[in-house]
Image (cartoon, rainbow, N blue to C red; front, side, top):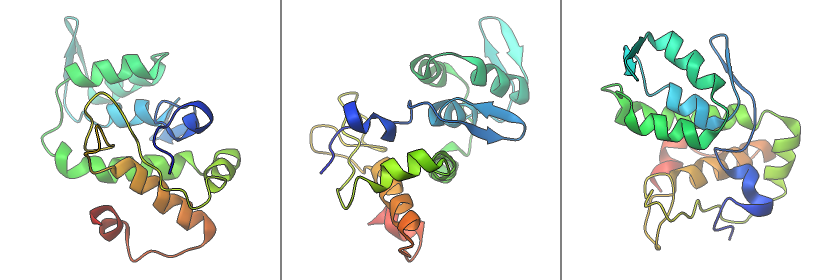
Length: 161
């Protein structure tokens, strides 16, 4: 079992550098893309109003994914976010692993269970103190199976297992 996405498994993290292109904007990590999709209305940050497109462009230019995550915790989130976030993450992770080198690294994890262990109490995407849904780990394992050509009955059923 791979219990944390750090060290040699750091490439599994959403903070790991990769290129995600969406609607003419290239994001430098899954985290950048994910946070940018939290918005579908105007954003007010530091006294400035941004359109959704300008806000997404601004997010794509932030250097560090940790900074992007902090912005994501302070922004106005779209009303349908809870219904959309799995779909958005699912798409972004698949885009990330279209990169041949990253795909090979994911395949090299073999049949290991992938668990996004964390200490920041994220029990939706990962596991903290033995509790959590581990949705990110499940998406990664599903993508790995797809890269191998193994068919699953559907991402929804896999995520709910």
